[in-house]
Image 1 (cartoon, helix red, strand yellow):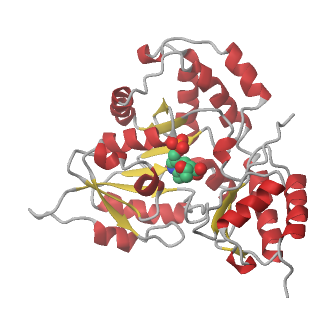
Image 2: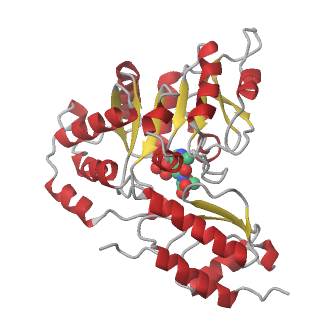
Image 3: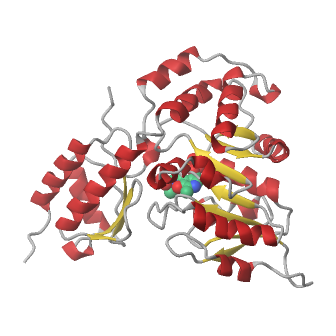
Length: 347
Ligand code: TLP
């Protein structure tokens, strides 16, 4: 049975499935700092195999996974190239700068994709005045661009520039399985254009905690050391790896339902006069409620009346809605029915 979780704020709110809870209770455990937790080892092996990389590392969160990856690829003083609206740049507390001693060179993308020529223009030539470019980061799906999946062709074009300049590529693939499902490609086809990929178990895949970093054996060894430095050596972490295994083996294909529900939601909202800001390709819908004469705060209150949680601020009419496990098609339909009664009538 799915616990009702009427919450559009994020797919991070998903609760573990009953099967995950059971797996947690029964998980075989050991000390993972000694490499002795069999459940963690099993999850890491599975993740590496699924993404087509040599090795994997379980980390506490997407933010920690991105940070250990960035640290393992770079040296203090390097500059990293990333998309101007990327999560690493905007939403990870500036860890790359504070902890890594790195500077950022943001490049504006088109629907989340940095064009290869723009990346190339941002790579620093040797010059005594310049920092060394150390890394290129891409994000897939791209959150603030609207949950847009970057295609293998787009990724290959960026990868080609990086390799021509001898640079590593890190992919913030927090929702890489949403991208793979939406594009109907094997996730390996996306991961192959990155030296390292971070992806999250605790978003649409429903595990309660955890993300993974995948890459070469040698890269993962370095990342493991940084994870320890950041306090991420988790001892009997099989407790969180067990639901992670279920996330990867049982929860990937159902992401399609979330994508269908997001499309249904977007169509219904459009019919009510609300502006949809991006093509809806995965589980995110970004809207502008100003055509209703509403602020984000009005939106939030309307949702609250209908029993839903949704973000919405007084100063902005832009809101992100995310579909996920626990939200069924019927829930979207009844939400839209309720909303029809609340929105001002159109003239
Ligand atoms: N994103 C959260 C918020 O921080 C915005 C969300 O609700 O979407 N990369 C991407 C692309 C993400 O969207 C997120 C989380 C992360 C990394 C960080 O993951 P966590 O929250 O596990 O640190």
